[in-house]
Image (cartoon, rainbow, N blue to C red; front, side):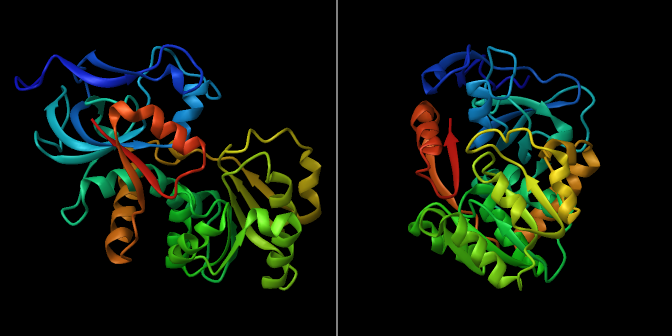
Length: 332
């Protein structure tokens, strides 16, 4: 470990599952030492994602005690054995675990240098959500120019990235949002038609989709809402369409009969990002493509708010309370 690195650090520890009361802000956590294939990063910006709440509540099981957090940006302060391609002071962004901390020892295989033209906050805000959207439209369902697709929760983190990437690919996007205040956000991101869920209702959404697709339905639905919208999403698919169910914001989708897919020869996909960026080559390919799109297409990186690490409880409350539009970050 570099001699300038302290022995203790600030971080957020959870020792049991539960609500935001289990989030413990600490100033006496040990600074990790990078192991074989790892780099030690001093984090300047830490990403908050909805998946963090799943690990906090126990919806996704994980060993405790645990430091939450799947991504951050910062600079490398030391290299573990066997690491090549990086050096101290490199400005990087990474995805892994233990992000809610001042320092993180993270695999070099999931770490990438940030281009000079992209700021550290933007790189952090883009990485997980941008990679999720990019892999969904390339692998869960490969979107083609001219496709009509439906994106739910389009003003949220992944939803906003989906709209921007779909526009760049030449697709037609119908989007839903949770309130009138979020309509403009989805439109600015590239959605051609934006519906407010509570105003349109299920019937209004169905009618709008059918009117805009000549009664055929959409070739793909990108649904991060989960339980509440699953049945409707399935109904709105065109023949040979694909329902990409990638989140549980309203709860876990209940078991369903596979025979329901037969009527349209439909597909249901339940992807996770990390299966698409499992290898170093996959991670580097998609991260580089994301950075290229951000620069060439001048994508908007919407950062809702940057919190202090010690305000982690308020950040989680805001995220779960649907009070946000865009990415939530923390600084140590």
